[in-house]
Amino acid sequence: MTTSELGRQEDTMGAEAAALYRLMTWLSPSFPVGAFSYSSGIEWAVEAGDVSDAASFRAWLAAMLTHGSGFCDGVFVAQSHRAAGLGDLAALREIAELAAAFVPSRERQLETTAQGRAFIEIARSAWNCAGLGEAVANCETIVYPVAVGLVGALHSVPPAPLLHGFLHALTSNWISAGSRLIPLGQTDSQRVLAALEPVVAATAERALVASLDDIGGATFRADLSSLCHEAQYTRLFRS
Image (cartoon, rainbow, N blue to C red; front, side):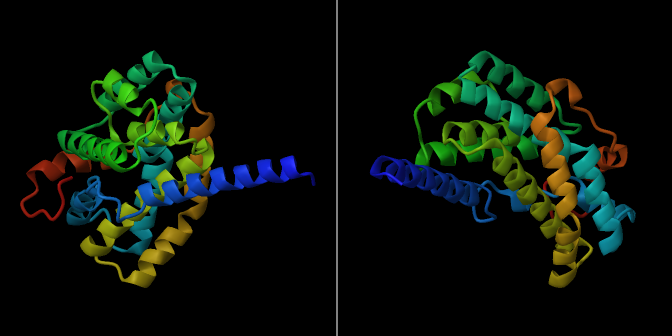
């Protein structure tokens, strides 16, 4: 290997390491977007008896990933990443507007907009980069999946690992909520996460190649739970 080839390889490895470091940081539970405050309606599902143990919880989350908000948010991550990577601000604005409208309840709107706003604010404070301010100013509202896709693209994080990381973080947060609500022990929580690994991977693969026309959900009970949670008498979570 020549000196120039070795230099290019080191540059590539350095860029990949930087992208991985940022991805792990942004989607870590310690990244302060307030995800721990939200259950995406799982709290009402437990109260109603739809989710009562590890098996029913796993089935609920698998449906949310495959046929509900998991897949839809994954598509928004991929599409916003693509638009931002191309510098297509008009397309990015349209995606952001659609994603903001594509939530079934007031609490879910609060959940995704608050996390999106926090993600952008922290990224601009600690991980600012060229084009980020312009892209953010171009969008009236930026929800969480659009924020992740946008920032990931501008920091050259490849879309496939970004999607896998996003869906893993989303699933992990759901499981964290369920572990407190059902409740589940640490071992059962990890069993649920392990069982959902192929579901997360398949959802990420679908979302990566999907278009905006493919967005849609059929998790009516999960949507209903996010609506009913607003009037739930005792609540630990904001959604």
